[in-house]
Image (cartoon, rainbow, N blue to C red):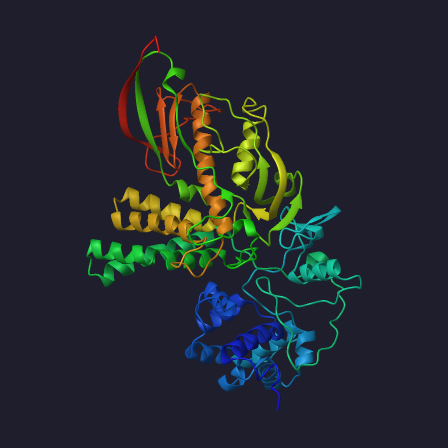
Length: 549
């Protein structure tokens, strides 16, 4: 007897299919399932992706309890699980798919023993955005989530208001016939239910501003949740190790990567955009071999000024160190959705997009400043990240004195972007770091440093972090750190200082009174201290420039 697709699946495949199908039928999101089974949201996404840790038997039991069906029924496959769930509510799968929100309300009422009412359900979550949050665009613009034309704008970003709209746009682009509406999760598309007959979905009649959206949290609330999480980890480590500072610090550093991922999950709750842990990547972001890098040039600086370009005399060189370079670089424009290819010039600032660009840079002939492209000797086109492109364009602008010609863009891989994707995690780390410095708390300071530095170094392609595979983010964050350092060198030169050396992410050597230097607007150029907006003096040395040199 030939096997059906349902029975030919492995138990794990059947479990994942059942979870996806039940989420579709109930109208739940992965974060709701994660809360119901006691896991972080990223852990559910990881287990469903099938690319790392699988579901355990205990977790399968928890999933079954969450949906109110037997575990063996859950493992029997999507159709069986959904029929059992619908039967427990006295309904059918078709009815639940047609009205998932109503079914979910009924299920919640049944599980709590309360009677469902016809009145509007009460919820502690923020309501869907009001109609004035969504504006109609005069002309379609690329959606920041899927890259296809959208006619609405939300919070300043052109985008489809819901995942259903993104799916409909994709269907319209692929087929000449009108697409059927597909219910989809914002992270991963939900597969169809094998063996389940579905009626055509109801036509949309609601206004764009009345459609559902992810609940949002206030920045202070989200940041405070992250700060509380970090403080709790530090206190717990000290208690577990009976106050042994060295042992607690070593333990926290070992836990830096999983703690950083949990911090991202905490600070992303209620966010407008889901973090996609394993997106499609173009070939330029794939390593040809384990020992060879991908094609992205990060523009890491390694520059020293020629002595003959300095004025003659005796000079004191101050070696400055930039604090928390990678921590500050977390605030940069990161791509949200799938990277989309385009040919020719693209204005990523106007379109609110970010990604990677194949460019031919303009010639650099400035002896007093390093090239924004970093230490590159080869000529010709190269792939650069968004921060490097924007830095080259600024250097070519009138405001910067037209230091070079603007780069010529040949092709790009970009997606809609936001500068705030990691912002809540960054401000939480920054606050706890400042507390650690003020209290001379070595344990907390080294813990925070390990979290943000290891997060950046392992989010690309690392065996130490199986929860996130975003080499695009890694390259962009690193490029942002290098760009930030170049920007400081430019401002130092504009303030009358002689820039002598720029290297890595945090090394800036200057000649002149940098403590008294003033930037545009009258504020101090380089406040001295250990904060992320300050610099500290690492070393001083004296050189003599011969007038005959």
